[in-house]
Image (cartoon, rainbow, N blue to C red; front, side, top):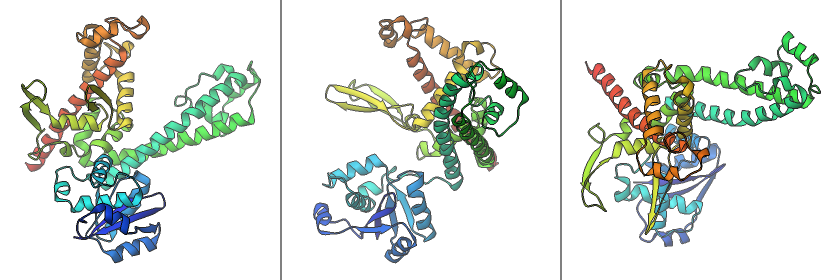
Length: 419
């Protein structure tokens, strides 16, 4: 089998072609030169002349790797992605501790030829469907717009504190007419009167320019959201959307989660059911149950820590999708946490989470409560547990419930389809 290892750079690729595993990878690295191809049709023609059976690459984001994957697919060349962490450890194991583009390309080609690695269950990354790729691209663009509009909004609030202090507390999303008027793009007799009678010092040209930028961003958000709706509401996603609707997820959060977890079958075992194993614990020696599918799902959403144990040092850090973790935090913060909504929420699932969250704050009988009791009162709510810990606990509980609800919903829909 002819394998093409590709290390994708910003405007070029570094390639390595192998038909079999080298006897000494270090020697091969020292005695051979990489194939470097600049982005363009000449590079595509060169790969077509090589005519590999499979091309292996390391994903470098939506922008850099997508064009190569799609162009190689048009040539009929199978493409496979390798996870960053797996490739790094494999490259070091080959005796290539120094990282450079050619070393990565060699490691990727060897990885596909190594039967111990390439035939493992999770050896390569799953390819997303075209619909999911488009949804993900739109979601990432929305996230980008959200990041750049907030600094502009903060700058406008500072300018308005001098120019029109009566309107300095306008929010970005709730006052599109005001921002359009401030940019000179919309008319408003009310705001004209407010400007004539303001106690401030008057508007500056820079303020109107900033308001124009914010208005354009808000319009682009509306355009992308309108484009995102029909994509998310396609029939193949109906089982997922039903669950998202019950949880009160809006379009943006639902689209983000969908782009990360679809299809749910990727998290299940070979038999199509949640994978559970029972074995003796390493430390206790007692029989323990490990819910592998649940942990994969939580890690994918950024809700399960990644352990780094070494000797007596036991550390953990956040892993998985930071965007999904942030989105679920926002959902908890706006739909579950506000006490003004408790007892008034019509969505029964959210009401249940509100009850559980209240119980966690008041009756959390674990070691965490003792730790929290030693903190200052400013970090505590009634009951003694830190709010940050309660939020993390709630997000994890929501993630577990979401996983099982999605599995049941997809299973029921597939059963109906068979009937």
